[in-house]
Length: 213
Image (cartoon, rainbow, N blue to C red; front, side, top):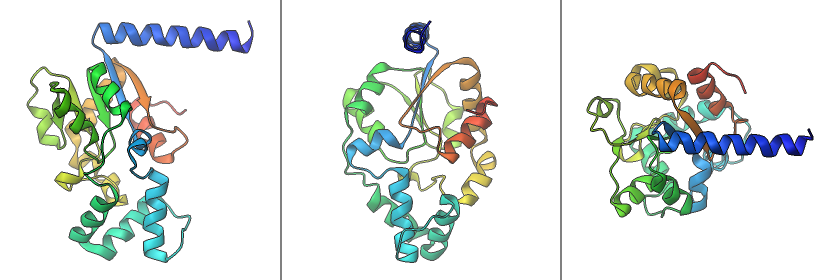
């Protein structure tokens, strides 16, 4: 069997598994910043470059989490969030990917994005999701699909971005962390808008699955 034939077979089998998971309600979607760039918001790399220029005057190759920590320390809580909200504006509009993912109605829609684009689609379409932006909100399930902002939300000013945020994640989001570990062990999970070459994505993926891509 040629490589092309093997690839086609893999795609066919994967689509079959996704359809089955959707029909039987164990399909989850994991959505990253690549989706929101289509709405004019900065990619992870672009955001880091912008912050580096503000701190150093030039782009600099530095650990993104350390850079975010420096950005916070230089600006303080109020200006830190003010500047991030200007860069990731709530005035941005959802694109077709946001709409199609919401219409898919997965069991769980999980994102590391801090923007409000999925929430806009949920409101516009009039669909029902448990919208979870803080750890306490996962304690009151309604039976609806869950939309989980696992890295917090700009409107709640509880985002995960700095080195300190990642180090304290298990302390600040223990219920969300455990829930997502369960999702990876029981559901078919589609990753959209991510690169597995991103070291931060690798770290999260390894933590939840024990698998190193």
